[in-house]
Every structure is written in structure tokens, then in C-alpha cells.
Image 1: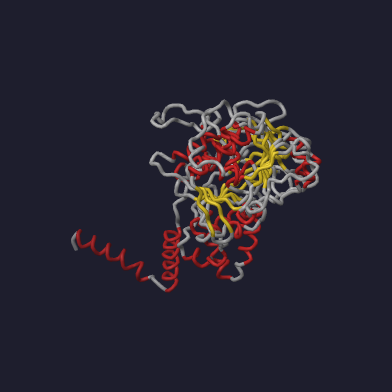
Image 2: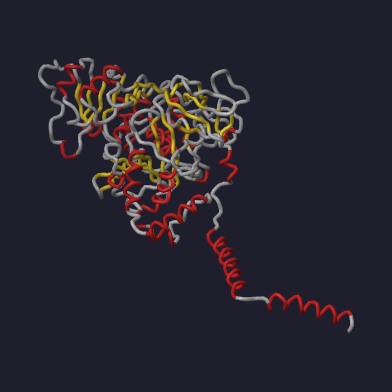
Length: 563
């Protein structure tokens, strides 16, 4: 037999020998292997961001002082300086040129001018469950002029806004920014009469803008005689009544007017141009409710604090996920909250449409707050989302629904937001909350947990469930009284759940804040463990530095968590 024949015989034996030993067990093992490979290929997903991006989210300074940690800054800064503002540039300026930090006047100019392509966002008001009113940008500019002129003409200096979420609240805020010497005071809506008078007295307000029936005029004037101007924001149903009458005994010391008469009784061609700049705009005063029964903390934010906070909000999401003209932002929490206000102003600056609903912030029911609209971006409180989580989780009442939900969570754990068109997502559609007329368009949710008070916090497991229920990414932020915007906030693509998911973290500091942890009682900062009281510093912090009064820790991935 030749050499070639020997080779062919050997080859034949090598092929037939395994087949000769093939049996039912070999078939079963091969089938399992093929099924495993097929499942891995079919269910594998591409992560939304590289895992290394989440492994080290903030950078500590090289040195630290005794009794405190190093400074931690967002890794997005790459070792650079904290961002102080909006980088406002005039049209035609090079995008490489350094822009101005800006102020609230630049926010409204951005609304008026639109983006580079001329696209402008809309301002909407939701009435009831179906009626949505769109406001003309030019008409709002006119209102800003007329309200600012009226307040200035009658000697107003400190303007208290006591309104639910409304277009009038935003108009007054911008009016106080465009007209000199006007300080804005945001008073939480639906407080008691005693609390209202207390806030007016502490802020030394001389002008109040409010809705009729929200407080007793004569009792407030008697207990707070420093009030000089009152503007009633009257709705269509009450416009026929005489709201200019001053109760007997006030001595006519209060100038009373209605919003409608200020705007409607002025010729339509007056006030259509933006006011000329008249010096630096004044501060914005907010009140922070701590634990029930405690006095609200009054905080004075400069406009530099506000725009720095807006820069921090912009830094929480990648460029391709930022707000834009195709978005509809609904603040479902009160605009008197500094965090909600800063996110909303950021949306206006980015040319997103903003929808306002007077129910928002007064109820934890997000379904009610989003009726009649299709929001793509939502600003909500932890309490509202906890309610949505409980209601949706209760609907997973069968083994099939629970299995489909776990499948979606596994996709999330791989670093990708589940597709709403997948089989598992369609199977669990009945558990999805009906937020707006088209819930599937919701893509981003901002939620701020308070550094103090009784508000609920959300666990990592709850946040993961909510991402599946809502089909949206969630930016979870830690907020504090003296910080405009957020102290720290999660990266939009961070879907991780640690251990059993009972804890939670707030991501890295924003790009406009830095944090240190300082020794407090039993909590000490060591080389092995970083725990202590959270101290926030930076341009977004009122006064430049604020102790939050809560204990935090830095995790291995350099994110901030509470102890």
C-alpha cells in the first residue's frame, strides 16, 4: 500500500471513529451546546457605554487635609476647572471661542432666537385632561416687559411669587431678571397662612404675585403691613369679578392690580422687544423645607449660581442624549424647588418645549400630571416615582409577566436599555404606567432626592425596575438647600445594581460642584474608607461652600452614596 493510501485510511478512521461512538448522550450534549451558543447570540446586546466609563466616575485630588477626604470632581472634567456657566456666544462667533457664563436673560434670548437652524421650543399650558394651550413666544416677551415695567413703576424691589407651576411664574422670573433691582422670591405653593407671612417677612417682600383664593388678603395685610403691591393672576372664569377692591381698614396702602388688566389694557404694539440690559440681574430667593415642624431655610442664589447649576445638569448626559427642539419637558414637581427650576431652565436654554400643569408638584400622581400631553422628558420627585413603582410592580401578578420583567432586567444589567418593541417589553405592557397620551415617547427622567427632610429615596433595584416600566433612562440626583441644581447625579447610562439592590448611589459630583467628606462622629476618613459629612463646593453652591448635614461615602467606583 502506498503512502497516499495510508494517509487516506488514517483520515477515514479519524472521521468514522467518533461517529461510531456517537449515541443519544452525545446528541443531547451537542444540542445543549448549540442551544447555549444560540441563546447567547440572540440575547446578547451592545452596552450603551463602555463598562470602564462607569468604573471610575470621579477623580480625587492628589492630597487631602487631616480629618477630611480629598476633593472629588467629575471625571468628565478631565482634571480641568469646574464649569461656571453656559458658554454663551453671539451668533457668528467661533464655537472655539470662550463664551460668557450668562444669566437668565440669556436663557430667554435662547428661547426667542432658537437654535442654529432657527428651531424654537414651545411653551404649553395643560388645562384639565385634554386642553393644551400654546403660548406665543412674542406674547410672552411682551408680558415680561409689561409685568417688569409695572413692578418697577410702583416701586417694587423684592417680588414674591406664590403660584403653582404656570406661565405667569416663568414670566415673573424673567421679568425680574431683565429689569434692574428686582429680586425674585419663590414661595412654595399651598403653605399655611402663617408660613406665608413668615416667608414674606423673612424675605422682606414688598410685592406679591398670587392666584385669588390662595390666601386671605386682609389677614395677610394686617399681619404683614410691609406689603405694597399685589398682582392677582385671575383665570378666565373669575375675570368678571372686581379684584382691584382693597378691603376696608388697609388704608389703601396696597396697590392691587390683575395680570389681565396689566397685559390687556396696554396697546398691543408696546413691549414686543426684549428690554435693554440694565446691569447685573438680582438674586433668586428660595425656601427649603426641612423636616416637618422645622423652619424653612431661606437661600439666596445668585444668577451665577443658577447658570452654573444648569451647566451641571447639561453634564449629566452625553451630547447625543441632551435636550433639544424635538423634546417636550414636563416639570411634574414644583418649580419653587431649585432642582426642578434649574432643569426646566436648562430645557428652555436647549430649545426644548416646556409644558406646565398646575397639578404638578401638588400631587404625587404622575398619571394625573401628564394627562393630555406626550412628554419625552420628565422631572419628578422620588415620592412620585415610588408610587409609580409600587403600582406597576403590583401588576406583575403572574409567572409569565414576572419572567418577562426579569428578562428585561437582565438586558439592563448587560448595560443596554431594553427595546420597547421586544417580545418581553410587549408582554409587560400592561404593567407600564400610562404617562401621557403616548408613554412610549418618554426617554429621560430627572429625579432629585433631598439631602434632608422626609422624602423617600429610591434603591438601585427600584431604579432598575422603573427604567423597565418607563422605558426611559433615569438621572438620579442628590439635591441640597444651598446647591443650585444637583450636588451629584448618576450618569444617564449607569444601570448597574449592586448586590441585592437595596442601596443606591448618586453618581459623581456634577461638573459645577466638587465634594469632600469630613470627619463626623464615628465616621472617619481613612486611606481605606472614605466616609463623613458631605461638603459641597463650587460655583453652583450659594456662598461657595455648604455642609449638607448628612453622612456619605465614596464607593469603589468613586460615586457618592449615603451611609
